[in-house]
Image (cartoon, rainbow, N blue to C red):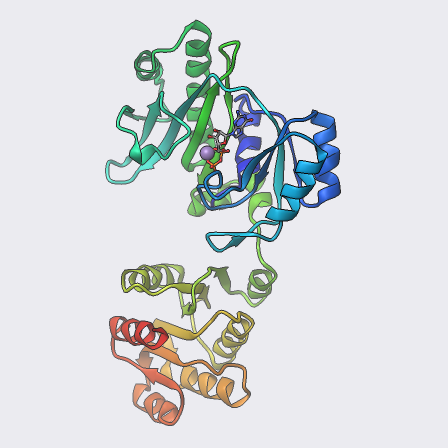
Length: 367
Ligand code: GDP
Ligand code: MN
């Protein structure tokens, strides 16, 4: 789960990491009132889960109310990489002496956490060569490693002390909340030498979420996702055009990976849970019908006691009731597959023996 900037900053603040003052707003009047409280200039920052907001013009300094109104109107509902702007952070404008970079991430290949820090912050860290990378154990004392990184950064006294303090607090945050990535870019040095987090990017491990009741408030479900939950399904809306249905989170995730390897773009992932019945598949198709962007449906059902013919019947019924009209590409591994083929013979749904085939055909069909 990727948090929005302001949500990540809330976690920073709870852990004593300095952030700039600001207010979260979703309408213009609140934005103006917030700016008045802070005093101009302010920074109007679109709250999005995609990166590169600055480059997309979605982080803007406003010197007065007119500019704020104009920028708010320009940005509201604007799309950045497929995500619509609906919420903003109105933040105090800070003078920057220098921009640093700091992050801690779960290094999967090494099975540990690693820190990356650089005195060249504010830009994409991939493009920066001057950076320190150190592995840490978040549960242990990392004093020596942090000092080593601090020395590498060549900071003045106050900045150095702040840096050590922030690094320690970030490690604590990562450990406590089971974070996959916590990034501050830029971490700025102000005129008095003190450090402040100007931005945040925090990704929480979804599999650890159940252990963190306090993070549930950050989970934002679309109305369709809520509807899916009521049916006992788990739905995540994405912005592609191929809907993916499967039974079991692991299966759906791997189908999604394979689809993306085949250059297909998923419109959603829908896990209908253990056993697929005529009702559950029909309900799943009904949910998908409410996503106008869907141009094809990829079904991958497998294992347990899946009756292929039962699934086929649900698909045929959904066509007949005009719930769906887009083609279905299905791989259903289970009993009665001959009967299923017979049922689907005259429909827009096709059965395949392997997921690869189903995916390739679906992707080809979209093009
Ligand atoms: P991102 O583009 O999504 O990473 O958004 P950021 O929050 O990192 O902002 C992008 C850039 O805007 C920063 O690297 C800063 O250079 C600039 N910026 C944002 N807030 C301020 C501010 O309060 N003062 C100054 N001087 N620059 C800011
Ligand atoms: Mn940033």
